[in-house]
Every structure is written in C-alpha cells, then in structure tokens.
Image (cartoon, rainbow, N blue to C red; front, side, top):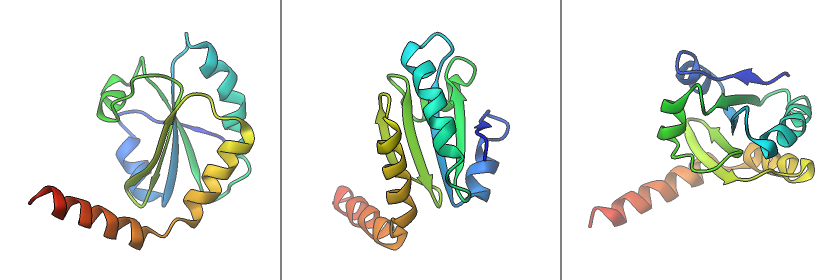
Length: 124
C-alpha cells in the first residue's frame, strides 16, 4: 500500500477508520527526511493492514504542534486511537519493520490498563 498524505482535512477520519496508522513527520528541506522517505515507502508496501501516512510539517503545522514534533523525521504509530510509539530520527529499514511488527502484536487491553493506572496515580 502506498503512503497516504495526511492533512488536517483527512487526519481524524483516517485514524478513526484504521486500526493501525504509522505517521512520518517530514519536511521538504530536511536531508534525513529525504533519505528516510524511500525506506518508509518500501516498508509500507510490506504491511497490507497498516496505513502509512506522511505529514508535511511545513504544510500541517497544527498536526505537528498537536504531536509536539521537535525534530524531523519523526515516526509515530497510533493503534486503536492511542499513540503507542514515537521516535525522532531516521529509522533503518529493519528497525522500522520491527516496530511495525511490535505494534501489530501489541495487546491494547494491557496498554489501556496501564494508561488507566497512570491517570489514577496522577489524580492523587
């Protein structure tokens, strides 16, 4: 599956309608982003059930601000509406493949349980 351009118009719909969405935050002027783009695109073709989106941080400053992007490229993963991975820097192909597999296998019941515990602790 080819990567999808994520914009303020389609972002929420894509995240809501898909179980797993990976996001590459990038910009045209960024050298490492240009190196990472083909790797990201290649890995996106290996996983049929995962949406791979790209956010141009220059054009979509609202999305970048929401995710508090401080450096690019940054890769994020959302599973069932929860951000489960975020890492700045260029990921080698094997590392990105590994992260995708880990996110696919991630038990979201356990993740939600941990989030609930953390929120309860913070309210005390």
